[in-house]
Length: 458
Image 1 (cartoon, one colour):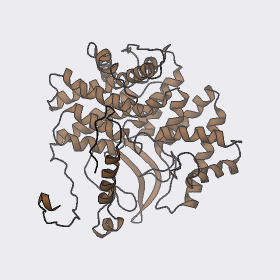
Image 2 (tube, one colour; image 1 turned 90 degrees about the vertical axis):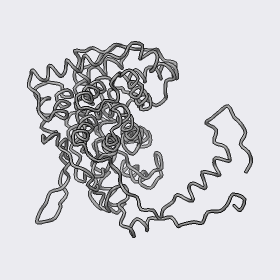
Image 3 (cartoon, rainbow, N blue to C red; image 1 turned 180 degrees about the vertical axis):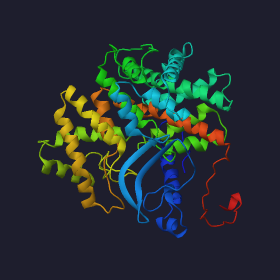
Image 4 (cartoon, rainbow, N blue to C red; image 1 turned 180 degrees about the horizontal axis):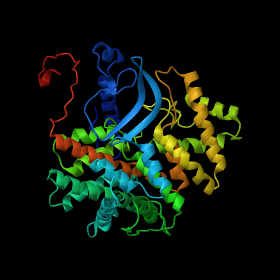
C-alpha cells in the first residue's frame, strides 16, 4: 500500500481509505440467517416489528392494538401523556383558545395538569430562563456556523456545560433546573444557528431578535425567525399543536432510549441531551418530514393533474418501484413501526391543517395530500408483503405545516428537538430517580478464534 501523502484538506477520501473501508465492509457483514439461528431480535424488534421490552415508564404510552378473545387486534392508534389521551389534551386547550406547549410540558415533567397559578409560575420560569449567557451568541453560535442546525444545537448544548458551575451534579433539583433551561433555550440555539448559517453561507441579512418572555414557545419561534417578527394567530396555534404532538412518544423511540442509556452512566445533562440530539438527527428518526416535503415537491412537478387519481397512483407506484424521487422505494410519511390503522398525531394535525392551508390559499395542495393519504396505503398493501397495516404518520402533515409556515428545511428536524427536549428531560429524570443499573445489552460473538502471528510472519 502506498504511503498516504499529507494534505491540507482533511475531508479528502484517499484511495488508501477506500481500500481500508472495503476491508471493513467485507468483515462487518453478518448474514441474516445468523440472527434467526441465535434468536437475536435485530434492532430490538421481533419479526412483527414489536419492540423488545427494555424498561418501564409512567411518562407516556403508545397504543396500536387491543386484546380480543386472547389475540392482539390492530386498532386506531392512541397516544397518552401521563395517562391523558393527547387528543383530549389538544382539544382542551384549543377549545379554550390557549397555547398548549407549556401546559403539556408541565404535565410530562410533573405528572399533573397545572392549575392557573402553577401554569403562570411555570411560564414565568421558562421566560426567565430564555436569557443566554453574555456573548454566547457572538462567541459560540456566530463562529464557525454549521450547515446543519442539529449539529449547531448539539454544540450549543455541550458548550453550555462550560457556563454551568454545577454541570456534573445529577441530583434531581439540579437536573430539573438544567432541563428547564434547555427547554427554554432550544428555540434560540436552533434559530440563531440558522440565522448565522443563512448570513455567512447564503449571504442573506442577519436577524437576531431577542426572545419575549411573555410570549408562548410557539410565538417566540415565529418571532425569532421572521425578519418582521409578524405571524397570524392561526400560524402560532398550529405550530403550538405540532410541538405538543412531537413532545413525547413512549420510552422506546431511538432518541429517548438513547437518553435512558446515556443517563444510566450518570453522565451530565448536557452530554445526555447532546447524545439524544445526535440520534434524532438521523433521517430514519427525526428527518423524515423533510423527505415528505421534498417528495411532494417532485410529485407536484411530475403529476400534471393533481385531481387525477390514476396519475397520482402511477407516481406512488413509481416511488415504490424506485423509479421516482430518491429511488429508495419508500413513500415518505406513510408507515410506522408501531401504528398500523392510524397515527393519532397525524389525525389531530389533519383536523387543524386544513384551516391553515385555506388561509394560505393552498386548498389544492391539501387536497393532494388527502388523496395520497387515502391511496398510498392501498398501493403499498397491493405491492408489498405486509406484517401489519400501514397508514400515514406524523411526518406526513407536519412537513406540510412547517412548509406553510415558511420554516426553512434546515429547521424541520430542530423543531422536532425543540418539542422532544421535554420528553427527553422527563425520561432522564425518571432514569435518575430510579437509580437503576447502567444499561448494558448483550451481543453474541460469532467470530472464530485465531492464532496470533508474529509481526515478521504476517
